[in-house]
Amino acid sequence: MSDTIEAMKQRLALLAPEHIEIADESALHAGHAGARAGGGHYQLTLISPSFSGQSQVARHRSIYQALGDLMSTRVHALSITALAPEEL
Image (cartoon, rainbow, N blue to C red; front, top):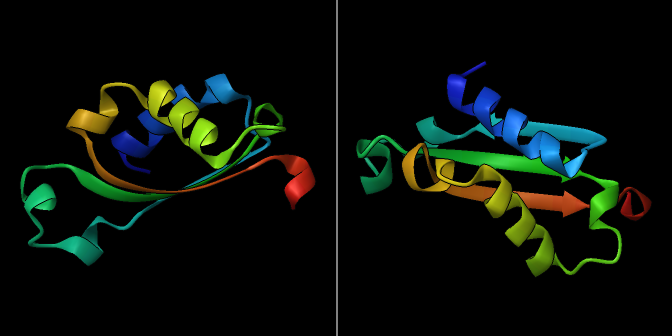
């Protein structure tokens, strides 16, 4: 597992996930400006009871806040699926 994925998982633990899956899709974006600058492309699936009653916008904000500076340094693009357990 990459250092970036491990760092993301550690920070996202704040959201008490029941399930978390992060896929590195950077190879699919080789040559892209963000990839050349060192930022990766990731697909995140996160299921957390903390998302119950929240809009998708609020969920994404929580994720971006938890990831903090990773979003401006090691993550160039992040595709997010954020669900509450009852939405499965």
